[in-house]
Length: 635
Image 1 (cartoon, rainbow, N blue to C red):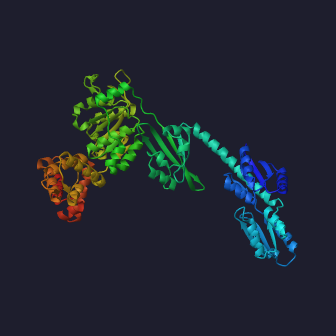
Image 2: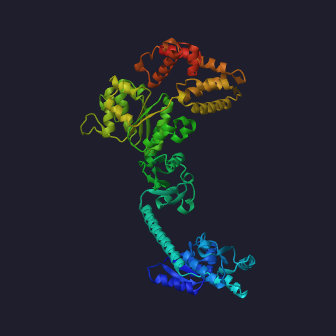
Image 3: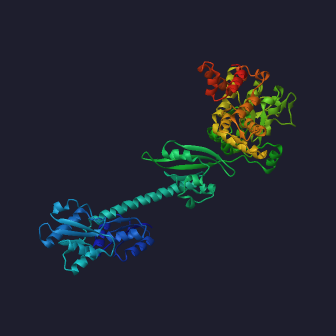
């Protein structure tokens, strides 16, 4: 049971309260006179009975607030009540413009700004600060020349002993009624909040999703039992902590944008060793003000693999080692691509990854696999560029002229319940593309497009990789339009190394340190040499850069590695022969990344009227490197 406790300083005021309560429905469970000495004790007794709000006046209200935590409504004198007391005080002294001293606790009185004009008196208010200073204040007031005082029981008793005119600070009941009305309003609001919270808690605990409520400051307010189980914590220990402390796998920056109103919502697919879940954060908006957010976590199930299947996968070597978060440590320039990959990971639809470095492409695909629900399944990679045309059907589907090869299953079946990465997907012949499209859409393939004994059912996630412009190949009739659009719907483009300078800096520092330690060397890389390395157009990104760093350290003859030495080494290592550069002469054989490079060079040459020195400076490369590119691409 909950309710209101009313504590007033005398029986008269309690009878006034009782008369008010008898005329209306109320939730008052205690109404009794109290003194300054026992009001705190009586409040504690009322709390044990179920009281959750107290009505009190003056010093008693102050003590209740000081020594308990229960919400307290103070009885404040109304203008009419105080006016009657002033009229009574004037009659006691019977003199024009008498000086009246009012002794009370702060907050007990209404606004008295115009009382002196209304009642033709001089009013001085003396606020009591503690229970022992009232007699000193009375003496001080008398010394200042007040003619009569208005105050509580102790002040009036002391004034009577000194035979000084005084009026008790009594009430007509109006202020008591106002205070009780305020207490009833607070009670109704508290009950409504209690019911709302109970309903909210029921909804939370009946949900199969984990749910967390946070405030506008990002601090956790409550969570349901499902979320407690997911996070291995309790709402009691988590409450008051910032969401980023309890759920560090979430993007704190994006959650902050949701709370600031800069983003409408936040959603992410989170995958780690323990859980795979979809996380959604929605703001709580009250009168166009964001007061917090609700975070919902829906746990998803990974494909179940038995211990025997896991052993078979490990022995066969179908294992992905890289993960997306680890990649970001070395390649922060992949931030947007990784964010997109994490979203795609929750689907089983095919993905198209476009990039120049196949080393990075494969690592990226491993990361997608390990973040997906297929993490426990096999990870198989097929390089279509290394497979003869006549062997493509056999490599992917295990189909040859003699039918299905039962001894050597195709890659699609080897990757069943897992991920198949097809490198250089642009190299697949059109008939193979048609077969692949059918297998993806129907989740089966066979010797004939009808149900028969040779039909193989398959559930494999395809990740296709390329460095070519597939759209151009579609227009040229060399790649199927329907397969292209199926793959492109979940497309990711890995940015060029030249667009990720920070990545190159991280890799350069790592490889430089690695090979200094491995070969027990001590060299200092000058700022000029470092800049030469970072500004070079690394075609194969980290593999090429790592090999270069080892060669540079092994052949360096001086302690300081100069920019001139680095430039000479770059030119000698990567200046292609005429026979080598004759191969990629037609635009149809070039990748889309190469086309972009050619366009940049041509635009710069036109801008500087063919001046190679200015062009090289604009492109942030050496003149010898510019010459090499011009020769390579026939510019």
